[in-house]
Image (tube, rainbow, N blue to C red; front, top):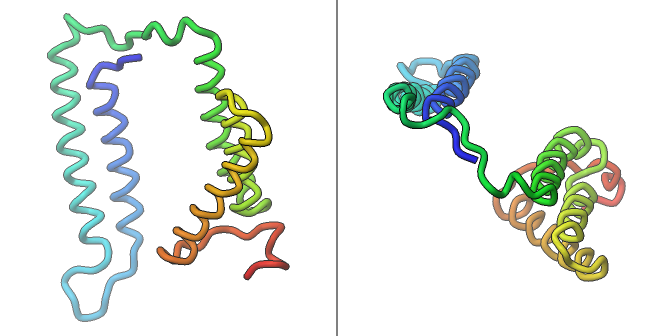
Length: 157
């Protein structure tokens, strides 16, 4: 599936506006001309600039390139189902990871995706368990990203 550049430009500008708006809520540092909002605002300004460039480029190509071109992959129902499952997995993680916790949520999502893509159930569970623990260790222990414990909070280490 191909989109005209102007569509991505609009998405980029919308994201930049949201990002800059959020950065403006950061607290100011006493006695300094700049604070923690400086770099996000600079990045947002760059996103605005490049979003505008994409819109101009897409507008110039509108006569030769349609706004959306659906690829051959979209004709296969299995591929469409895979995309829907993938997007549903992201939505499931957003909605349930705080309650369930990162480990059960990631284990469930990876198992479903691996089974859907052709792995056996046993292999899917083993691969999902190993990769979930590696990802959890990498993010929670090494990078110090706070991942939700959810139902596993009583046994958190």
